[in-house]
Structure formats: C-alpha cells, structure tokens
Length: 304
Image 1: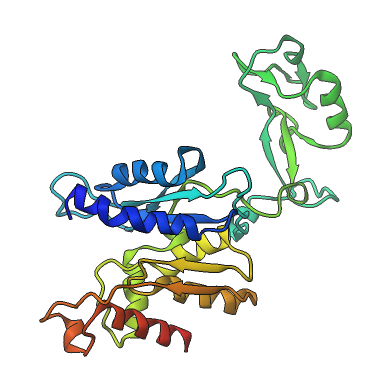
Image 2: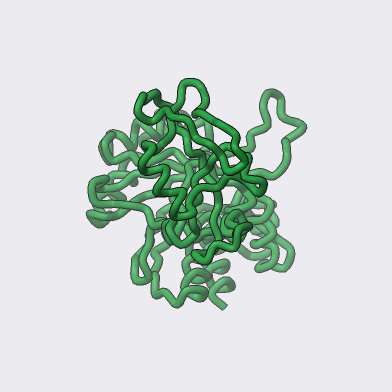
C-alpha cells in the first residue's frame, strides 16, 4: 500500500484497539523499517506520546542477506504502547542459565555465589576520592574523573563484611561483591532482542513446516518464542490476548504453549481477514482458499 493508503488502513484498527485495551493494557506492534516512522506518529496520536514505552529491535535473521543491494535487513521494530503508562509495568524476565553462571564463589563465602561490580562511579566527589590499600600493600585511587561509589567509612564497613574483592592475590583494584541472593528475581527487559533468545524467521518457518507436513505457506511468520517473550512481559495467567492481524496464528500457538508450560489460563482472540491465497500458490493447491483457512488450521494443529 502507499503511505496514505497504509495509514488509512491502520488508523481505525488502532483506535479500536485502544478502546479495547484495559487501563493497564499494552500493545506490541511489529513493523519493518519502511513504515516504522509513520506508525510511530500514528501511535503517538492514538495512544498519546506519553504512553510510548519502547521501540524494541528484534534480530529477525541469523545471517547476512548477501544479495542485498545496500544493507542486509536483519531486524524489525516492535513498538510498545500502553493505555496508561503510569500504571503499566513489564514483568521481569526469568534469569537465564548463562546469567546465573556469571555468579561464582571463589572465596567460599557462606552467603553463596556472587559477581563483582565496579566500585568507582563517573563523578568527581572530593570526599569519595581517597586512598585504598589492598591486602598486598598496593595503594590505589579511583581512576581520573571518577570517585569511589561509597565514602571511606562505608568502604571500611564493606571490607569488614567481606563484600569487597581484591582478587585472588589480594592485589587487584577493589570491586564490590554482589550476591545472587540480593538481586531481583528476574531481569529487566532490554530493547534489543537477539534471535538466540526470541527466535528468527527461519525458525518460524520450520515451526510451520513441522505442523504442515513440510510446507510453511507464509513467507515471514513470527516465531513462537518471540510472542512468548511478549506474553511473559505483559500477561498474567488469566489475561485475554487480542491479535487483530493473526496471520499464521503464531499468537494463538504461543498462548497455548505458554499455558501448557506454566499452568496458566490465558485466552486469545485472533482476527484474520479471509484474504484469498494466490491462485497458483502451494497453499491453494493444498486446499486453503484464504489466509484465514491457514490460520484456523494452524491453531487447530498447534492446539492438538
């Protein structure tokens, strides 16, 4: 569609979606580079600039597109808006095994695993610039243009509490020990989503092929891991999820899959126009006369 045609196509749907959102509701909209600027302006008007949350970058491909004329298009945008930014907060994401493995216990601290963090901060505060003598006798100051993050009295208390690490030989620049038991139960979501965490287009195609006997019928479906990430960030176990551009039915698949894994009772409504499939397409040959027919069949098979 042309820009003007595309805007007139989207505008009434976004207005309806805003009306249907709960006060603490949130909408995630996937879009490519070609339309993201127009969509951002449209969403600012519909949801209000103040209810913009983030522009998430999803790494949708795992390798370069070598036949690209200019740049390899390896990402899409996911715009996130709420109905009321003051009351909506994303859930924390579960810490991965890789993140947990960053915590070690080289000194056998009875409080458990920990990792170090910088004891200096990027500010110049005279009272927080003082000499520290390491156990090996080395004298150190914070780097130029920085101060220690705590005053000298607080530092000495941290040393007494074995919360400062000077390295295995006692000669390293002091660092603060942060115990895994002291951190949040989850991870604050980032605005860059790597395919290794949320899947990519080829993975999404393979999911469809697994359901449809080797055929995908869609060029660019979304992977269930991507939608599952969104569900984990934005839903509770009894929430209702609306996808008004259902496409290949990934949202329904992801909702059912997450319910099966965490015992939730999330429900979904999927909307897809009965747009005809191309006459000579593999989908038409298989008996799917409309996109909706494929959507419905995917949901049925995923449910089974």
